[in-house]
Amino acid sequence: MQKDMGEVSGEDDLYTKDGTVDYRNNPAKKAETGTWKACPFILGNECCERLAYYGMSTNLVLYFKKRLNQHSATASKNVSNWSGTCYITPLIGAFLADAYLGRYWTIACFSIIYVIGMTLLTLSASVPGLKPSSDPKEVQTAVCFVALYLIALGTGGIKPCVSSYGADQFDDADEVEKKHKSSFFNWFYFSINIGALIASSVLVWIQDNMGWGWGFGIPAVTMAIAVVSFFSGTRLYRNQKPGGSPLTRICQVVVASFRKFKVDVPGDKTSLYETTDAESAITGSRKLDHTKDLRFFDKAAVQTESDHMKGNIDQWRLCTVTQVEELKAIIRLLPIWATGIIFSAVYSQMSTMFVLQGASMDTHVGNSSFMIPPASLSIFDTLSVIFWVPIYDQLIVPISRKITGHKNGLTQLQRMGTGLFISIFAMVSAAILELFRLKYVKRHNYYELEQVPMSIFWQVPQYFLIGCAEVFTFIGQLEFFYDQAPDAMRSLCSALSLTTVALGNYLSSLLVTIVMNITTKNGKPGWIPDNLNYGHLDYFYYLLAVLSVLNLGAYLMIAKWYTYKRPVGTPR
Image (cartoon, rainbow, N blue to C red; front, side):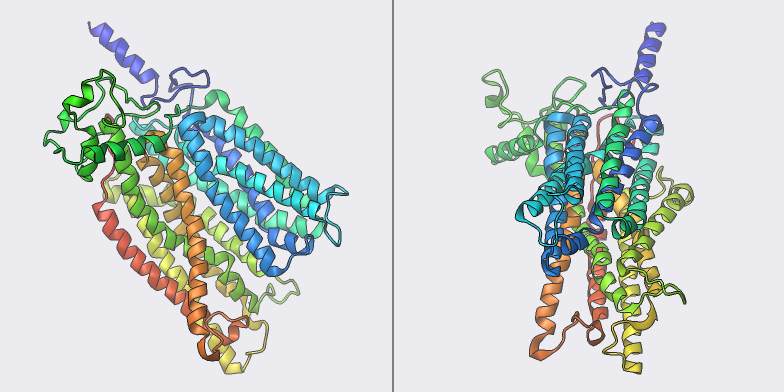
């Protein structure tokens, strides 16, 4: 008898307990798949993909202006529309991954679309006939935009899946592996910024000095390397099975709850409907424990006599506790998700107001004649992330772990809140710099001077602070949305977290529009005029700082009442 028990226990230790399978669709063996041995292929894929993306997109507005002869406003709008699409398409890729294809095949298929788009973009910038002349033809512009939107579609299948797929390599039901999962998100974000660093320095220089054919060609080759890197690790990956349409399951719970509007929820949770099997009825998902909040939706799991009359259970009338808890988990995520929008609005200032502010300062490097492009100062944000990720992973986590007793040092909510707090100081730092710049302008009557003799490198602290805030908030957000998402909806929740970036950009644009409409009345120049020497950009930064303070207050209230999801049999 003891021998039999030992065999069962040994078999339990042999395979993962989170339902993952290997590339042959067999239960994944712990010793042969996943963990850090699978991650280099995924991190290499992400680093190369981000290098390709930023290498192609960073200078895109100049390509539109110089090669497609577009006006500044048109070029800027086209880049914004395309960038926005890149953060909306992840909803498509995520739905397909969770519902039908699984993360592996979604990444594989969309990566190939991405490579086709990059190749077409390279050809459109280098092949005679496709390459825009001094007066670009409509067909040349059309080919360029077809290529760009193929890339937008391709990135939509990669963005929401890669971080989740990397995290899938660590078993949630294993205490040791779960601890490593938190570290994975840090190094995942680190790899993104290594790619961005090379793109914003080397590739931008190549585009400006060696031509757009090379400038787009190198990212295309890099993306092809990313695909090879991803496929190379196939035998080592752990795969979550797709669980069918998550939207259908959500709708079923809502409909069943309203159908049983008048039914009372019993006090004993064990009387609620759940499958008797050890596994959940949802493919690729573990069972979830019942939680006490949002009790209205528990009505969907209340069993009545009519539910069992026809033999087969109608899922639009009766849902499992796990299915109900899936919906609850999504609803609980939404307020936390909403607080990320203000942070993304602050983050978006790096590519807008910080650049305008820098352009009105002295861009010379030291006493040399070399002038740094104002947009290139974003490299200090990237360097800040690269600096802070190892510090956080190797220093802050072990120290805070001793203080808090939490396995990750800080909880995901504490980590995100810390980033929101730091972002306030980024805006205050930018505002104080602008205040001093305007005082300098007034003292020396430099109003008509295009570049005030004040070094652009005074902007470094605000970039560095945003980079630090990213390490806490964006990485914390990645981990939180993966961890708190239902197993069969993880890609969808990762895509949801990405939409805060798009909404943050839209909010920033809305704020600029409102501020300019109010402050330009009676012939005044407003806060953000073309000549910033006559404006008050510092007031705009202070506005964002105040909104960030209010956002942090709302976040703390939401985080205090947040209920973590509880998979059955998972270590806390």
